[in-house]
Length: 511
Image (spheres, rainbow, N blue to C red):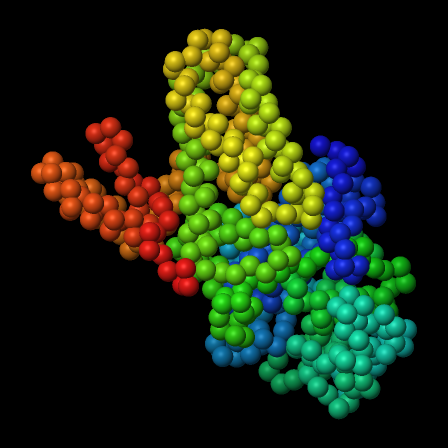
């Protein structure tokens, strides 16, 4: 699919409206996303940001763009130093540990690796050179080894966030300091303190302020002027506002064409944050839920909207994804006896008109939603569900069909599977594992949540079979209901009883 033929509209925070994406260089996109401050395991608010921009990255590639995607690690920061002191570790050793843990989480969530993943500690020369330029332009000043940015020299300060300069406060991570010319001025460089990591600079040993790192690294990897800058909504002010001021001061030809911000994950309508101690780590959630179920949940609302977390929502996401994979597994098994027949046909058979219509609607609905500011809400419903229903209803009819009709249906099912897989792939919900392997993993997570082992279920199934033989239907129903409350559904298929995950019948939605 050629990028120029598909008009992707993205909401630009700067202009507060959706705009057609027009790259600076045709066919290429420069994308910078603010990453984590690496001092602890990342929570699902961080996962929301990562998944949101991974979807953007994947979709841009799907449209045919060559994407230079940069996501940084903040590995030098007050929070890192404080946590390292608490644990008796070197700050860079601590941040390196949690950079690596973050990458483990990203792998589990199927987030593609960015083109570049720079760390602050590796780019001190670029940061220092940018600060020197800012001082040369009379937009920064030195006080006792500290360097501050003068916001009064930035005429458009506050344009992104809507914060008027006279109303701004020092902001998160920016200490109030009587040495500042304006209370809103922020640190570009911090003079070294005892027992803290520091680097040599023209102003003495020290380390960078929080904001300058992204300006320096985005300019280095993408140039001072690039297409898209992303991050969480909480970064609009002061972080992104300060980035704009710094980069404009240091570089004449600078600017970001599209600013994108994902909404927060909330718990009880309050933003999830480590400072509020109301967060759930990615590692904690993927310990009891399949990572793809968590990813599916994180995409269940349009990326700009707030997303309220509950385990009930995760159960719904898990059940929905299990149905998708079970349908595809049933299809794989259903097609297995006919693979040789399809090979002999050599692609002569044509799809049925109904199948063509389903595929057209599936692709059309998917593209329409994605082109409209990456609207992933309910994206596996509608036409996608129609495709799955077609698969399920058609499989049972194959044996009764005449050879020509059967071949046409087989081709139809193969093409619908391709379309269904393409959507899953772009959304990051398709793995390298087989359908059966994914289903097995999802069942294992169900057992973990239920605090059951396979042997426990086998024993209860045997007890239920015995109860039914003895016509003790009350006990039989009691066993079934007990398991359903645990998120385990029993299904009687012929003489065999099997189980699959289901939504717990009495799940506490406030959990």
